[in-house]
Length: 120
Image (cartoon, rainbow, N blue to C red; front, side, top):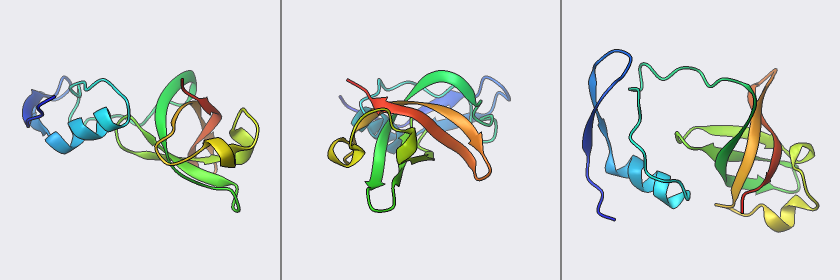
């Protein structure tokens, strides 16, 4: 697919902003359909926590430390701990760029991915 910078109008404030080629490629490389963002960076709301599966990609996982990070669709990262992985031996399956499903939950350090499992 040929990507190009695209002008988008924020649905909240009406400001025009650019949906960059880099952001489009990142979405595609993560296995997502490339979708125009609805809001500019200034109007993006804090991610709602709670139930509901979300798609992401493992950025990295360290089995010695028992934690890693997931890249969310918007490019931000969220922490996850081995104890929140649903499956056996995460070190064998949680490689860089592995697609996963997860839910977000609040912790004392911010949002944390829970109920993490492989996306097939």
